[in-house]
Image (cartoon, rainbow, N blue to C red; front, side, top):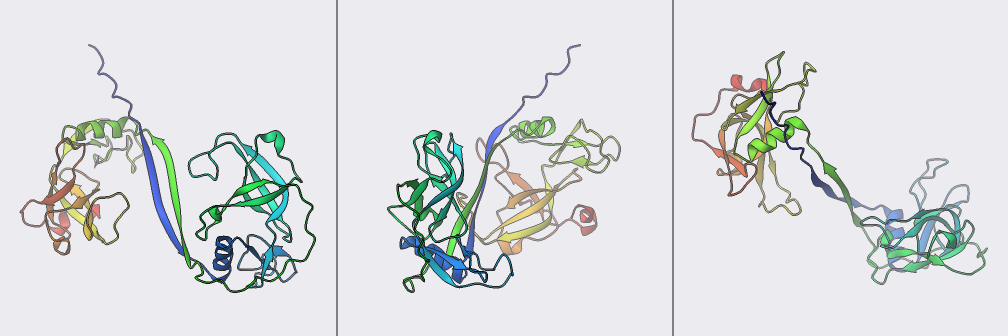
Length: 320
């Protein structure tokens, strides 16, 4: 008897992205607004050191500091590392050096990119200057990069800022993104393959007999491998839910909408899905739902009410 063929090993690129919005205090606001105006501002600590980039609290005394000073746009490389293969979102698309630059008048170094033809053109102690971006918005990217510059260090004392900036930058959006290739493994691959046939398949633990959906390949309670496949659903019960009021980027769903944990019939673990076909303020715990598939969909687009009476709380309370 020939053994069953091994399931296809699946993999797919996956991107996790979240644009993080943060407000700025007076020090960071001045620093970023200064970059927009082609000026670099630091802060003077209680000990007299000029810190660039500026910080809001003295690293030695933890006291708040707001004594802004303007430093030069030229400086000295204190250390560096060559980057032969720039990645998405980095300052330059061609090979460059990451450098720590101590700007003239500063006592600390600023990390940025140095545009150089190769690693042989970079050295500790070399002089560089800021290359400003053509369009500046009040962000660290207003410094496009550094470039080599033949000059002597400016030994003059850093001076106070030239004055208050009009229209100061009050907040920034910092996009956090992670790109990687995901391979789900044996049990999730079987689960995904079954979804392509509009079936939901979990795996039963041989010890506690619980059915886990989606399957994990092992029981999280008993710690033993699972192999027995069990088809569950397609109907299920809403156990808990939330109302989403913020529209996600690249997600064509109007807000508000409901995202819920759904315990499919026969499963001992709730999965999550969107609830549709009912006003968002009428979704409730115990609501009986069924999947809605789109043409050529590889997973349910959403779940809708079945019209059945709500499930009794005791039937799903262990799955909350």
